[in-house]
Length: 318
Image 1 (tube, helix red, strand yellow):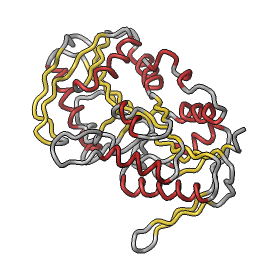
Image 2 (cartoon, rainbow, N blue to C red):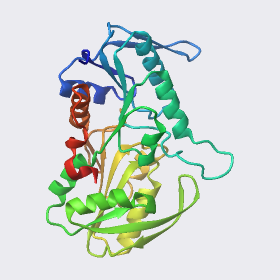
Image 3 (cartoon, rainbow, N blue to C red):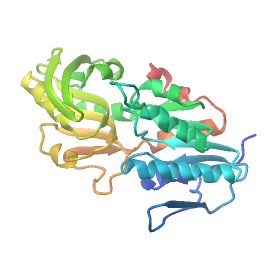
Image 4 (cartoon, rainbow, N blue to C red):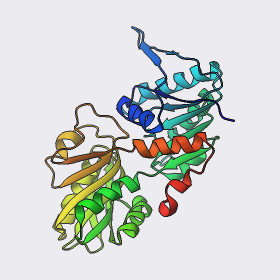
C-alpha cells in the first residue's frame, strides 16, 4: 500500500503547484528554500515525509539552471528523509531541444539532465508535452508524458465555432502533433517549410498546403522568442488565410517575445500555465492562458492509486 500522498512545490511555478494540490485535495507540504550570499541553495523539508508518496512540482523554466538545481536538491533531501516514492513533476522540461547531436562535439543535454534527475532521487517522472517523445527513453525510471491537447482543443472548439479551420505545423518535426489536432477538429492540415540560419533566427518560410479563406491555427509544443510564430502568421496571411491563432503548450516567452507577439498579426496566442510569468495576466487581447492543473492533479491521483494514466486521454494518445 502506498504511503500518504504529499505534494511539494519548487519556486518555478507556485501558482500552478497550489492549483494542483487543490485539485488533488491536499495541502502543499512545507519546504523552505534559501539562497546563501554566494548563490548556493539550501533546502529543508519542514514536515515528516517518511514513507510518503511524494510529488515534487518544478518546471525547469527560466532561470532554468537555478530551477533545475533547486529540483535536484529537493529530490536529494526527500531521498535522505526516507520518502517512500518520489515523483518529479515537470510541467515543462527544459533542455528538451538538445535531444540529439546536430553537429560534432556537442552534448545531448536532455539525456544529461534526465540522468541528474534520476540520480538525485526521482523514482518516476510526470511531465507534459515533451519536445520529442523519445526523451522518455532518456530516463531509467517510468515516465508519464501528459498532453495539454484536450485543454487547448476545447478552447479552439468554443471560440472558432463553425469556421473553416486549418491546423498548421510550424515545421516538419511537428507534423504528428498538428495531425492529432486536425483529426479531432476534422480540419485540414498545412505545414510551414522553415529554414534557419542560426538558433532562434528564421531565414525563410514557405507554406505547404491550401490555407486560402481559412482560419489557421498554428500548433507547437512551445513558444520561445516568438520569431517562428510571427513569421509563420505573416506567411499564412500572405497565402490567403483569413486570420491566425496559435496554440502552444509551454509559454517560454524569452527575449523580446512579450513585446513582439502583441505587435504581430497573430489574433490570439493560446497557451497553458506550465511556465509561470508574474508579469502576464491569464487573459488579455492577445493572450489566453489555460490551466492544466486539473489534468496534472488527476494524473497524480491515478499514479498514487496505481491506476492507468493513459485512460485520461482515451484516443488522445494517438
